[in-house]
Length: 75
Image (cartoon, rainbow, N blue to C red; front, side):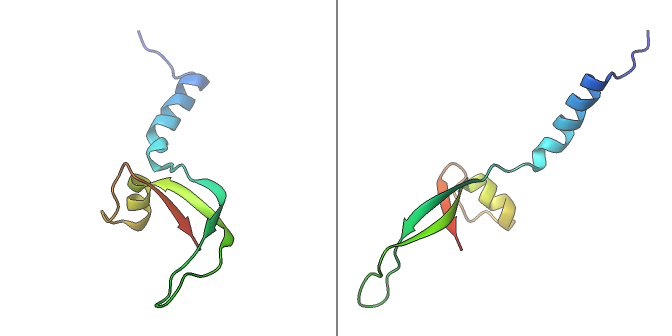
């Protein structure tokens, strides 16, 4: 017996096929300082992107980050 793909089945198949390209990035305001040779800077509030090393490796096409560690990226 032949079965046709119904809309819910097709949608589920579509999600399964293309979900491997999804990356979860959480955004938050973070307080950062930087250090020069003699001292630390004042604190700055900036937007940070919070993601796991696994996702960061995929975005940078590298293996430089530990997959299960959480990183904060600021620009």
